[in-house]
Image 1 (cartoon, rainbow, N blue to C red):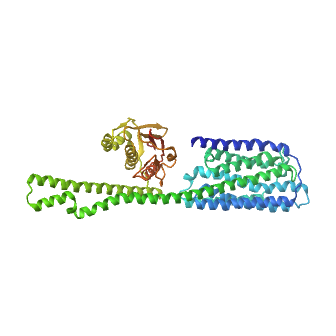
Image 2 (image 1 turned 180 degrees about the horizontal axis):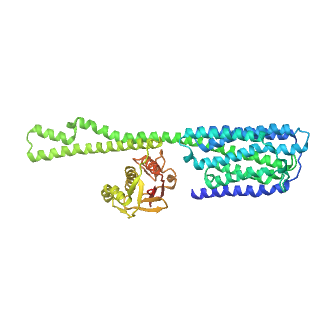
Image 3 (image 1 turned 60 degrees about the vertical axis):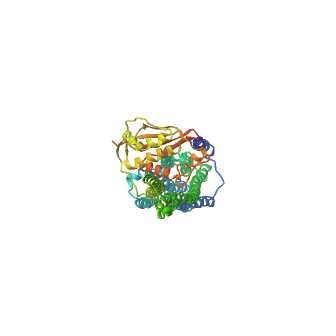
Length: 522
């Protein structure tokens, strides 16, 4: 799995690098090359650009309301404004290209082209800033939606007013070396947005963000290596710039379509796993209920139990000695106790399952929080492990706790639940050997590992080990009694504290669960 991820990251990185290496120097070949083109051809290109930008906005809205992602909503509103300016440029260009003065064409034509370029580059840069500081800027989802829409409307109006009424400065087009020097400004904005999203790092695993980085790269190449050097109407350099712009839009569309397909697959998988979960849940709830309901009739009619019946018969014969009566009475009470103990264990198991389900539901609904406090890790671990020492000893297990002297920041009750789940599983699936609890500090997090020498987990089962709706199989053994539910709850509680959980295992060699929890804030 890790090798596959590294290969994917390498492939994505080198694909971006190859695109830059191939496309950037081509402007030297295409510069000052005239191509057969026309006003109609340019109008068709701008109609296509407008349609693609509008389609991106529609896809972004569908994606947002399928699975809310604030940045995709923000980018979608940006492309709505871009579609407006693409149409504005297409109409302006058509009017400009019918002008009688060639000088007027050379000046007016790039001026309207710059409107969607400035707008989109600024908006994509703002989308990165919005992601970076969204927690500080906005307090709620509704506030984000309103502010994103307000920013989009404001920038659209401001950009339109600027490019409609700002004076054109012909002297800028006579600067040495650049036919269209104002193209450099959106190139810089695209470059900064590109660096931001690149160092954000999500492109390594998120297909949409990879396509977004690719789109930013194509836009940067267009604005930096092509458009500034286009000094002739319909030269190949300008046409290449238009083609790169269209490719950049198509890259975003592909990213959104793939992302929507992934969401659809996840929804399908969720439906299947929920069905599996209900089947497993019904079985797990049925087991303790079967025990309780199976022994209830015996308690309702205790005279039918063998030892109670023997005691009653002996009393009816009136030939029983005191010693014999005592033996038969103790046997009858022991039989009653055996059944009630089984019912009690089944009832507690049923209650624990229901409580775990309720807690997990509360966490997923955002109704549960973690009230952090300073906890001495050594004291807490020793206290949690104390009730398990007898169970471990009965199975020939040694419970070893390595002293750490660390302090964590967590809610004690929830931390106890997390460690209890992991220790309980370690004892349950180990028949002999050692259970080791150790910890280490990694920057501002404490890493706690619980290792056992138990039956281990098959590699194929590791991928679904901590899944809310799975019940992994280990050889011919199944993780009975927890359905993966306890581990799902453990994961949710750890993440509630801002940590994470991972597992490594080898079949018949043992398993190690590792959790991270924060240190107390300064």
